[in-house]
View (cartoon, rainbow, N blue to C red):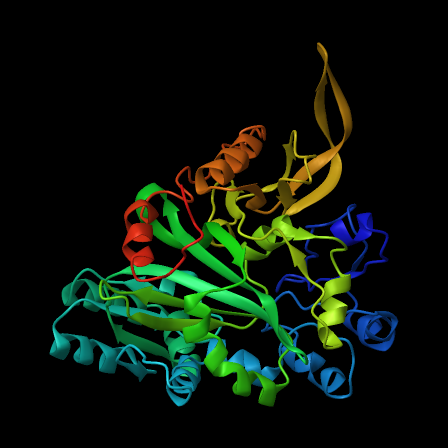
Length: 430
């Protein structure tokens, strides 16, 4: 949408669902393409810039094009393994001199259960590959994790996933979770470091299931202690891979100020890219092409806090399992493109209130359970929160939409001062 509004011609290639049905997100808003042969034969050569939004579905298909110099702003099959194969990611940290959390890798639940019982303490289980987010679990005790492993063991799909991609059991480190990212290309790192804090649980206070993410607090800065420790050391690895795009490392910072890396993100983050768009200035695509050509032209709002908040509808995050109909529901008052970033939305017709009459008019409709992300910016976290929540409160839907109300607050009110005394996230203030 934003590239279209800036005057660019855009084509969005989107795969069909596994049952052959067409995905409806974006219909009527941007031109969509579902014919993979037409995409390969025509549109890859047509594009001045190719932006994969993820690093699983299309990475292998794009690899031969990337190798012969097509303008692909995204990682390779090799770089994606840093994220999807946790063993490889941990090895890269260690090879670059970064301390890692002790742990063991498994492809079998029985072996993992025996390991946890032997250790006898609270631990963390994280899947490799593109597994369900619900398979990432932070336990409160050894018994807690053993129960979850036993539960997953009874699900054939999870057993198959474990055999194929494996999972890692790590020590549970107490502290504050933080992440730092940066843009990398032939010219090296961008001058900007992207510090961020994720809110992955469904409910306030980090209660409920892992959803992928419900919102993010972020800021672009020129100097970052965490980037010095986690990103700069992997520069030679990225150069060898000829990596182009965004890279992010999430860590736990303990009470002594030691950061413990958990994982790489080797792609555009979600919803973090909406935070980034909200704090970028100028043309939304040109800086990507410049990065591909070795030049850092990205302009951002420096030292400005940004808060993003996901608005979803039931049965999120389980709609694909319950198969409850979540498409075609009207979304009102979502025109504010400064703060509103549409997600699973299409253009259609619905009942609209005009004065004292109900009229059927073109309007935005749901095309899934993740409706939109609202962003807000400010010189302080409080100001950014106020802006984001003022925008999301204007949205109306007849479908019980919901969102977390503590993005930027919650766990961070204590965690931020704890890490700032060790020199981290120094530009964030309430």
